[in-house]
Image (cartoon, rainbow, N blue to C red; front, side, top):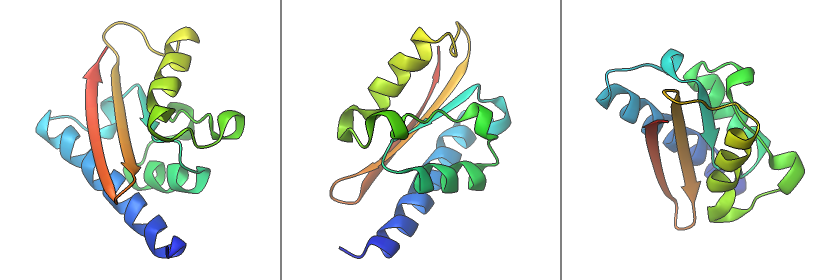
Length: 111
């Protein structure tokens, strides 16, 4: 695998899908309480957050604690955010993922 090229595809894809779901909802990244990306590596998380203009305080990362937990990374992160009180009723939570087979997806949830 060509890591540097895959990194760029991951950042671009996660950014694009995040913008797409926000646009479909008639919202912007500024409306999001917290952004929970797939926890692949911190550089990807930072790259997507930067392109979306989401401040680091609104981006959840547990990569340093758990590493890449594959398809479980967003559910684990979401649970941690709920348990820590970072998500409350009515909050908008943006989640985006990139994974095996060079696939990606995103969802915007009103909690």
